[in-house]
Amino acid sequence: MPDARTHIDEGLRFQKLGMLDRALKQYEATLDSTIDPALTGEALCRQAHVYRAWCRWDEAVRLARRSAAIARASRMHPLEAEALNAEAIVLLEQARFDEAVVIFERILSLEIDDRMRGIVYQNLGSIAAQRADFDRAEQYYQSSYRSFSRAGYLWGEAFTLTNIAAASIDAGKVKPAEIIAGQAIRAAKKVGDLELVGIASLNAAEALAAQLQLERAQELVSEALGYFQMEENDLRRAQCLRVLGDVRMLQGQREEARKLYGEALRLADSVRNDFEVSRLQDCLELATAVE
Image (cartoon, rainbow, N blue to C red; front, top):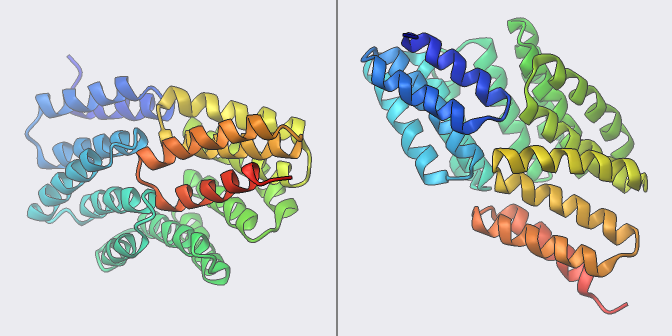
């Protein structure tokens, strides 16, 4: 019979492949097979990430907090940092930026390694970029990349490229974003993380659409949408549908664009992401404007 550590490792493997139901079962098997606080806390933290991917925010936060409490009681600072990060990412994806920043700053006060420090800087950079503070975002991303390099953390470097591409799009630097997003896709494939491949492909599609390379943009965003439909990630699905709507608008297909924006708005509203809701309302208003 597999031991608890094996269940966690198998769960992570399934999670990277987007097979979240199977990943969750492995993490549940961990909890059934051990009372070790380190393994229990890790399994709860990984469960939190699964529920976050499903945009089931309340359950994700509950599990992350349980994990953090176990880690705190046993003075396991690295695990506590992981659990706090899991909670903060949920807040970030709901665009509750002020609350997320408080938790990220708390993590930085713990005894953490370069890998975790790089993750926190990445997430702070993402918040700064979404607030249109691109200079601060760049500073955070540079600090993150240096931390990941010191740690030899290849996944983190791929994550950095993905976020830099997204920030470049928001700053209107679409050609550099296209190049960096292509690098991010290759890096994400190298580390075998299909969710990261999907996010990087979405970024690339948005950059290409802005340059009127519509056929390639549609191809990439459709690939990303297929992955996020399999993962049942409604926030990412909304973002993909928004980019597809942009493509249809640029092709002169207003009615189809309106349908895509409307469906994307429904999804974004269902997962309570006010930032994406606002973007989609603007898109829908433009698509319904009198010509």
